[in-house]
Every structure is written in structure tokens, then in C-alpha cells.
Length: 278
Image (cartoon, rainbow, N blue to C red; front, side):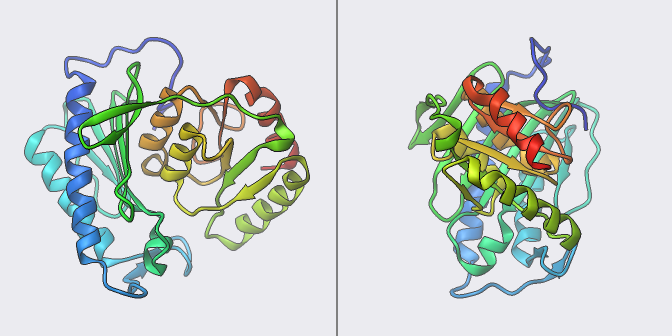
């Protein structure tokens, strides 16, 4: 997939992004209620693994993605669906829905209340609308390209604008780790190199929620390797529309690297990330 968050104006076609974000919200909220209502007490059984034995998937991941897929295609049958857990559906409309049914699956398995439904709509490869719903808490974030970011409180939208950042030495930085042992070891070395230069590091376990946390000021910056479009699209749009700078190692944010920080400190922070060896 190309750069989801290009600079400058983009033709988003005939479908208003507001229509897309409202559909995404309706489906994400239904999916979050579906998962919350079916999660058993205690630890959840693992159905399979993906990249490694620690990278898990549950039956509810699959059921939730199928629910999201069916609702989106019922409303917009000519669209494409790109999901983490199932087969992609190819459509011809130019609109692609990028879906993570449960972002933060390990948190979900253990009952740590930080896991989310993430749904974004991309138009010709550009993120146009996105919604992230924390399944455990009910918090909802939304954004449309060029239209800002917000949280929903009932049907009221409260704008989310990235707060002014502290100095680099006082920044709280979010990150995550690969489930592949060799990559994880390299990431640990990079985090160890960064730690003396910032206030502290947090590993919360759900990339979409991490990016919303940066937008909301709960984190000052973020860095992670290995994010796929379904990890990045909705939360990344919330972050950029809130005013955060988003970048990759030497180009667009993507699988190789995602960095996010306030534009006032992004150059300094991004330089530190590169120096630390991410």
C-alpha cells in the first residue's frame, strides 16, 4: 500500500468522507459491543498463531472481522475490504476499508483493558476516514482527512488537538515490539539506547490506541516497527488530523518504521529515533 498520509490536497472522489466515518463508527461500535459481550471471564483461549508462537489470534478476532466485513459490504458492496484475519475482498469503487477487528489481541487474551476495533476507509490509497473504539472502555476516536480529529461523547464530537509538547528529555514515549525474536532483540537494544534521553517508555500493546493516545496527549511521542496498514490507518489518521507529524525511517510511515511526535519537536525526536537504531 502507498503512503496513507500524503502531504497536500488529495482528491477523495465523490463520496464525502463524513459518510465513510459515520459508517465506520456504526460498524466499529457494533463490533466492539459484539466482542465485549462475548469475552469470557479470565484468560481467553488462543485459536492460532501468526508470525510466531507469541503472536496470537482468537476465534473472536475472526468472528468480529466477519461481522465488520458483512456490515461494510452490505452498505457498500463495491468497496474493497483489507482485514488482518481474513481473506481480502476486492472491489472496484476505489474505496478500501482497512480493518483490525481486535487491535491488541494479547491484551484481549489476558484481560488488560487496552484493545480496540480499528476501521479506516482509504480512497485510492489515501486514508480518508478512521474510527478507533476501545472495546474495554468504550472510548471512541474519529477523524476525516482535512476535517480534524475528535472523540465522541454520545453523539457529541469533542475536538482532539495535539497539545504543546514538553522538551525531549521530558517526553513520555510509546512503543511496541515485534513477535519475531530476532527483531524483538534489536528493538530492545534501540529502546535501551533511547531511555536515557526521554522521561520514560510505555509499551501499552495496541498500536491504534497508542496513536490515539499521542493525539490526545496521553503520550508525547511514539515509535514502532512492523505496523501493517490495519494497525496504522485509523489511528494514524487520528494522530495526523490532531496535528501530529507522522513519518517512517526514510519516507512514509509503514512496516519498516512509524514515528509520531508534535511538529515542534518532531525533527529532534525523529533524529533521536534514528540514532538509537530503530
